[in-house]
Every structure is written in structure tokens, then in C-alpha cells.
Image 1 (cartoon, rainbow, N blue to C red):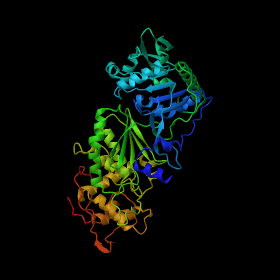
Image 2: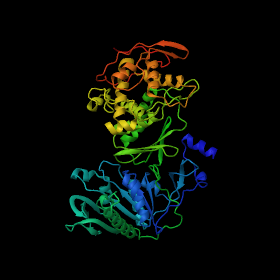
Image 3: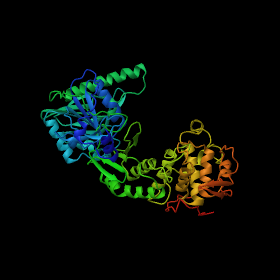
Image 4: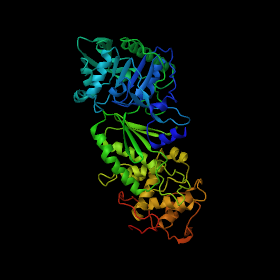
Length: 551
């Protein structure tokens, strides 16, 4: 176990000789048919298909697993896919033998999303010709131009079908009308009599197109009507899978297939690139501009953030999953190793999330014991901290802040003195909305950047970790944090915090003892008002007293 943990913490994917000792758990399937279904996520990661659809399939009697790996790699017999296996309290990344499948479901609704590579299309055709079933899940196209560039529509053309801009309706769901060659027959017509779900035989296998994923997406509420609708959808889904799977006998055998577990997987992208203590996972069908971003831009952003905040390396690397499509991401913190998923089609989005998550791993300069001592109320590596460096990283291309704008404080705290940073996070969230206290913190930090330059931030963290070295587990009060900040900048910040509406009992902090030296702290001449532009220059020596950068 110690050796496995060491390998896992190193960032390596465990080999098959280890996974044999820690096999995946069997899936629980209602009335198991022995039919294995692969849900392809490598052409668009979507929370419904990632985390809800597999459970629906298991409710209908099918084993189901999602995959962010390229289709040809996960369908290759005798090869391995990257999964996460249970080893004690950890779920390390490991290589697991590819399963055999009866059906592949591939989903894509965004015309900008990842292409189906020629080798993926060939693998799908071979799979179907040999008796496998293929389901294409689409959506209603918004315009003709998007329809022509849509990779899923191009894939459908390989089988003599396609989507159109025309629509029909089924059970209140708007569905695109399908364009079909004579090899196809309608599986379901809309209210106007147009085909919206269609099927055909192809070699020894079968292909089925569902015009819109919305048709099989049940409501989330638990009302009797919603539950009845869900049961109807699962029944219709089961009929479609049974038909498309009929080209070959059920795979059967072991039900030890990867399954979703409050994270991205279950089958992860097949390729990796290491950038210091960050490991990026990606499929070979990933867009070139995003791969260039990984290889060229991420190292630069990483270098700049690490320059702004010197920190000890974390115990284990950050695992970053570069997923397909657009629309957000996820984070796994419930078990180790942690992972972060990025679902974005543009470089700025990828780098923004990368910077945020990288900052989460950085606690600033440790003390002489190598420790991060004391914990301030918003977390040494919390959301406010991560958002601060995310905003700086986003400003690198232009030198201007494009996100996490501190001066948005005045959109809701008009005079800058109403939101009380000493109030509890719950109280501020209930009164002002989620994250508004973070905005005010960013504004405070930008005001300090304006006067002292960016060196004040790593100096503050070093002062904190040094000052509380004899009580490293201490949860600091806000007053103690303002003391730490005041020592760091060499001026008393308590009057400023009072001006901005922070309820602190201490009025002045005129003198401090730090590292055995007495420091006189004049009042910081800071006033309420808009903060200045983002400061992106290199920091100085954070162990030495600061020189005021600007008045």
C-alpha cells in the first residue's frame, strides 16, 4: 500500500499488475441483461450524459460506463484505458483492460466541439459492421452554418443520414427532422409526421439516431408527474438500446466496468502532459489550439503565478482533465488524488480555470520550518485566494483585468462601507449573494497592490506563517489577519478596515513585535474609492520591509 501511494502521489498511472489486486467494483444493474453500453464523452462532456444517463441505463438493465478517451483507443480489444480504482481511502489513476461493448452512444450538441477523427470513424464502422450498435444523440441545430460544420452531423452522413433545420415535436420536446437515405426507417415520428428518431442496419450491426438529447432527459423534480415521465423515458430508452444491441449476443461476464463516482471519468483521456506539478489529461481528438495552449501557454501562466507567490511544492500534483465541448467544469475533493475538469473550447477559458486551480495548490512562502502556519478565515488556499490569481492570469495577454474585477464592489456596496468582512460567510451570502465578500476582498487587495506593489501578498503570507509558527493549527481571527497584513506592509491597516465597514474591536495597531524586532506602524493613508489597474510586474524580496510603490 505504501508503494502504491508513493506511485500515485508521483502522478504516475498505476500499471495493470496493480489493478489486478484492486479490481473495480461490480456495477449494480437492475434486471441485468448483460448488455454493455459505452457512453462517449470525448466529443462533448455534458453533466447529463456524464452523471445521469449511465444511471438511467443501469435502471433499464444495461451496464454503462462513460469515456473521455478517443473512441478508437477505448474500443481497441486487448488495450488499456485509464480509470480510477479503489485502494483504501484513495482512488488512484490506473490502467484497466478495455471492456467489450454491445452499444456505443455518442453525444454532441455543439457544432464547435471536437471532431471525430478518421481513426475514430473507422473504429466505429468496424464496431458496427461486426454486430455492434451505435446511437447518435444530437440536438436541434440553430442555423444552417452550424449544421454543416457540426462533427456529429458529419458522422451521421457516414451512415447515410443527417440532421436538418426543420423541427417537429414529441411530448412537448422540439426535435430536429432527420434527413434519411432509403436504408433508414423511422423509429418515431413527430406530431407533424416527420422522422425524429430513426434506425437502420449496417453490416451485422445497427445504427439509431435520436434527434435531440432532450427527448431522453427526464425532469429533475420528484413530483408524481415527473416520476411518471422519467419511467416513460427509461422504458423508451430501454427499447431503443435493445433494438440497436441486437446485432450480437450480450457481452455478459463480469460487471466490473468503470462507473462515475462524483467525478469526471469513469474512463479518462488517454494522453498526458506534465507541467511541473500539474498533469494534464487529454484525448488525441482534442483541438489543436487547446493542445498548443497546454504546451505553450500553461507553462507561461504557471511560471508567472509561481513568480507572484513562491510556494512549497504540494505533496502530489494537480490532475487537470481537459475535456471536450464547452460549458464549465468540475472539481473532485472528496477523495484523493484530487482532480479538476475543464470543459472549454477557448484558450482563455482553459487558462482561467487552470490558474484558479493552480492557485488552490499554493499556500505562499513557508516559514523556516517549512510549514504554513495559521489559517485565515477565507482559507489560505481558498476561493478568494484562487480568484485573485485567476484574475491576474486572465490579464496577462492585454495587461488589463478582464475578470474578477475588484471595482464591481461598487455595483452592490455603493459607498464601499456596507458589506462587513467580519460578518460570517453565511451571513454575507444571505444578505449580499454568493461571492460578494470575495469581490470586496479583491478590492482591498487591489488597493494594497496600488500602494505597495504585488510583493505585499507573498510577504503577508510569509509573515503569517512565520508569526504563528508556534501555533500552526491556529484559526486566525480577522483582527489577527489584519495585524499580519499590517506587519507585512509596514503600516497600520486597522483604520482603513474600519472605514470600509469592518467591525473590529481594535482601533489601532501602532506597534508590533515581529521576529524579535519592534516595528512602528503609521496609519496607512488608504481611502475608499476605485482601485487601480492590475499589477503584473515581478515581486521583490518578500522577507524585507516594503517600499511604497505609489501614493
